[in-house]
Length: 122
Image (cartoon, rainbow, N blue to C red; front, side, top):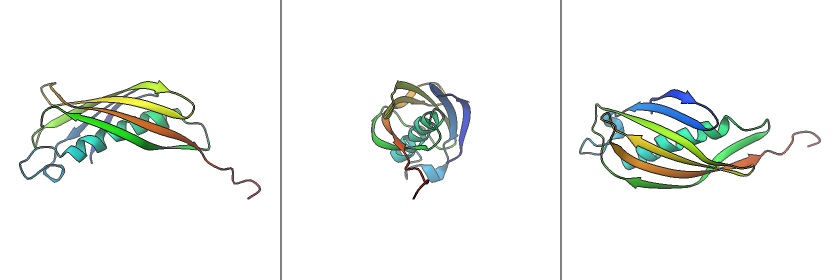
């Protein structure tokens, strides 16, 4: 998708993404699924940064509020913050903004933290 990380920590992730034509609807507006995938990527990166050895993560739910469109050829920015970082789940809130700083989408997602079975004795 062309996500460019700017800041990445267990509490905050910032990134940019070029709005390419292949990520847009027929009208040249960033597709809703691309907004969601961009935000999901940021929350997953933040979660992965705090996982212990032998853990992985997957998204269990995501809710997106679409506010405005971003046009092909522009750049969107994403700012994800951890609302909750528990042992079993992490909850992230991501704002996606257009080049003028106007809110395009607000995404809340939950990441499940999975303890992988040990390969010892298997």
